[in-house]
Amino acid sequence: MIYETFRQALKNIWSNKFRTFLTMLGIIIGIMAVMVIVGLGNGLTLSMRESVSSMGMNLLQVSVMGRGARTVDVDDVYAIVESRPDLYSGISPIVSMTGTVKVGTKTYSRTSVSGISEVYFGMTGTAIEKGRLLQYVDCADYKKICVVGSYVDRVAYGGNAIGQTIKVGDDQFTIVGVLKSQVEDPNLQEGSNDDTIYVPYTTALRLNRNSVVSAYGVTTVNESQVSEGKAVLEAGLKKLLNSDSGFYVTSLSEMLATLGSMINMVVMVLTAIAAISLLVGGIGIMNIMMVSVAERTREIGIRKALGAKERSILGLFVTEAATTSALGGVVGILLGYLISAGVNQVLTMTNAGMTIQPSMGSVMVAFGISVGIGVLFGYLPAKRAARLNPIEALRYD
Image (cartoon, rainbow, N blue to C red):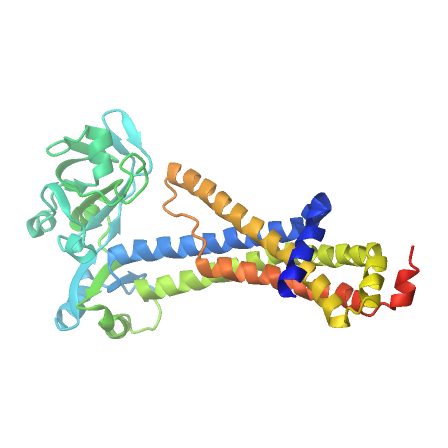
């Protein structure tokens, strides 16, 4: 009976192919949109997680704005960290430098320039490819030297950056090291983590004509100590500023959780909007099934006259509605994968650093929803068909 019911449903669907396609269109668009949106959310979350994980989940970011005339000296922050060697494994001031980056007559507008200490690279797990990293003496002597990313080395100097000079604003820096590439595609790195310049933080402060550092990176010995490390830093800064404000300490894990929550919220809203297409598709299925019941009234009368029970008629029309919706779901899933693959090609070409990644779970849920919509919106027309009076149905013209 189940096989025969399903076969009959497919036969009826195939006999009205164009009408069935138009009926499925809302389901197709809704399922496709939901898949792409969920895949986009998955891709964004994974991209953020990989980016944060590469820096180390035990990294704390400290921002010190000060309070009124009261500021925090670099040595004071170092003292907090060095008082707990069992808790902290490293600290580095982070100073942003402004100014146009030039090599000869060419300007690199997207290259970032940061002042750091000699331990920064060890904290973030950044490896050297050529030359050397910054050293303590470079910071102590305010040297105008720098370490550059592989993009700068390759594009600006043709792979021979060591010993060359690079201009940041009005100042010349000698390149002493080149970092290993952190980007998979070596041809698309402008503005990426490889398009960077690192100088001693003391030099950056002097050139910025500033004596106060407003940002620090601090690492704990292991990831499980992040919460304790954050609490100790906050207590120390509160004591120095005599206030709860004027600073904040953020862990990368907290940032990741916050960004993840924001992305999930946006995905939920967009998914809800896309789900309107599924509602429209369900209404379309109900409408076409009502038409189908009207067209096949005489057939239903003959079936009932030959002994078909109400549940058989009900099962036939519900199966037809569910099959129509399920086929729309399958087409929507296939289109979702195709669109995701096409968009991923574009994202790869533009070096977006992320991809659309539809999950198997979302595919299964999408298919289940499409079948459920068919059953839900097909039940009322099927119930109407099952309750037809056989005598009146046979007289229907």
